[in-house]
Amino acid sequence: MNNTEHQHEHLTGPLDIQFWYRRVYAFCQSRLISTSDAEDATQETFSRALSRIHELRSHEAMGGWIRQIARNVCVDMIRRQKVRATVPVEIDEVACVDLEEAIQRESREQIVRLIHALPEPLRETILLHYYDDMTYDQMASWLNVARSTVNERLSKARRLLKQQLMTENAP
Amino acid sequence: MIACDRIRPLLSALIDGELSPDEIREARSHLNTCEACRREWESLQDLDRQLMQLLVVRNVEARSTEIAHASEMQTMHDTHSWGLAGWVSIFFAIAAVLLLAIVPALLPELDVINPPTPAATEVARLVRSTGPVQVLSPGTSDWTDLDADSSRSLVAGSRLKTRDDVVCELETSSKGTIRLNKSAELVFRDPNLLELVSGQLWCLAPEDRGIDVDVAIQNAPSPQIAIFACPSASEIQCEAGNDRAFCNSVSTGSEQASLTIGEFSCEVAPGEMVSIDAAHKVDRVTSADSSTKLWQLPLLSTDQGDRELVSLLNHVLAPIGMTKAMHMNEQQIRKLGPAAAIPLLAYVAHESSPEHLPLRRTAMRLAADLADENTTALLASLQADPDPVITDLAKTTLARLLDKSD
Image 1 (cartoon, each protein chain N blue to C red):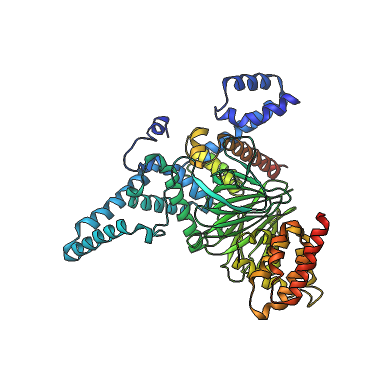
Image 2: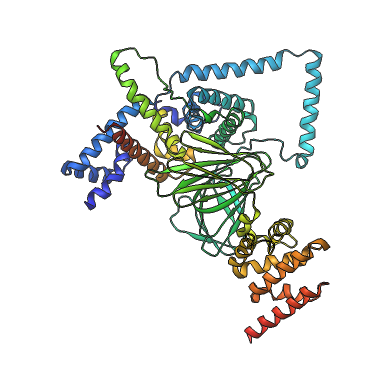
C-alpha cells in the first residue's frame, strides 16, 4: 500500500474497506492462525461494520470500532468452531511457479510456523508491519499502544525469529 | 561494548526508517567500526527481506470490492423486495426506532458492539482497594498512586501494580470484575484483554462477553504467553508463577475456560486448576475449593452485608476444626492478619441464620485473635449479640485492644 492512502485516514465518508483490509486481516490471523479462517473473519468484520456504519458517531473512532468488531468476530469463531485447536501450517502466497520458489518453500514454512509460535501481541505486530506499510505511529494508534511498545514488539519479534531460525538450522 | 548495548536495540527501528537523524548517524557510525554489530545488522536485514517476501496479503482490491458488492446486494435486496409485508415491517421498524428513542434507558445492553470513543477510552475503574494502587498511564513514565482522592479511571494501555499489602478490585467498562492480589502487576489492553505480568488475579466476565487473560511464563528460555479465555458470566483465577502459568476455574458453576499457548490449546474444566510450563507440559488438579479465593476476603468487608462475603465464609469456615486437612483454611485466614478481622466481624454481624451459629462462633474466635484497633466499632456493636459466646469474645477483645492503647 502506498502512503497516500494513509492520508485519507481521517477523511469522512463511507467505510474504505481497502484501506482497513490489511490491518483487520493481520488482527484476525494473529488470533485465528489459519489463513482461511482469517479471511472469513475479515470478511465478516466488514459485513458487520457496513451494516452498522450508521452507529459510528465520529470518523476518528473508526479504527477502534472496527477493531472491536473484529475482536467480537474472532471470539465468535473461536467459540463456535474452536478454530485454534488445530493449526495447519499455511502460507499466504501464490503457487510455486519456479524451482527457486520450490526450494525456498520449506524455509518459508519454517518461518510461518515460528511466527505463529510467537506470543499473540508480537505476532499481530509483526504481521501488521509486513502486511500493511504503516509507520510506527500509525501502528501504535491502531493497536492502541504506545509508539515505544510497537518498537519493542517488532524488535523482540525479529530477535526471537532470528534466534529460533539459527537454533533450528544449526548443523 | 557499551556502545553495542546502546545500538543493538535501535537496529530494528533503523531497518524501518523510524529513528531520528541523530540516532541514525550514531548507529551508522557504530556499524562502520563494529564487526559484531554489523553482522547482527546484516542478519536482521536478511530476515527483513525474507519476511517482506513472505508476508504479503494478495488480492486486497478484489476482496474489498467483493465485500462491498455483497453488502450492496444485501441492501438492495432489503430495499427492493418489499410488498405488503415489507411495508408492514418498515412500519414496525419505525415504531421500534421511536420506542427506542423514548425508552433507551430500558434497553441498555441491546447492542453488543459499542463503538469506543476516540481519545483515552476508559477501560476500567478502581472500585475498592485496601490501600493505594500504583498506576502507570500510557505515554507517561512515572507511577502514580490511585487512591480514593484521585481519579479512579484507567485508560487502555494502563499498567497497574499492587504493593505487598494491598489488594484491589476493578470494574471494566464492559462490566467485568477484576480483583488483583498483593504484589501483582497487570496491563489493561482493553476491557476484555488483560495481561498479567506477575502475581495473581481473579476475574468475573460480564454476561455478554468473555475476558482474555494473557499470563507470561516467567524464566522461560524464550518469552511465552499463555492465553486464558474466561467465558462470559464465568470466573477464573490466574497466576503468573515461577516457570508456570496457572489458571483455576474456581467455581463449578462456570463455563469451560480455555488455555492457548502458541499452537497448543486445551480446556480448563469448571472447578479445575490447570497449569502449564514453557515446554507446554500441562498439570491438572481438580479443586473446586473456595479457600483459593480467601485472599479476596479483605476486599469484601467494605460493603455492609456483602452477600459474597457471607457465602464465601459459609463455605470456608464450615470445615474448620472438622478434619486436620481443613486446618489449612484457618491457617490461610490467619495469614491475612488484621486485614481478615473486619470481614470476619462483618460476617458475624450479618450472617443471621441459626444453623450457622457454629460458623459465626468460629469466625468470632478467629477475629478475636486477629483484631486490631480498626475493628473497635464493629466489636462494640457485637457486644449486643444474642449469642453469649460472641458477646463474651467481643468484650474481651475490646478490653485487650483498649489495654494496648493505654
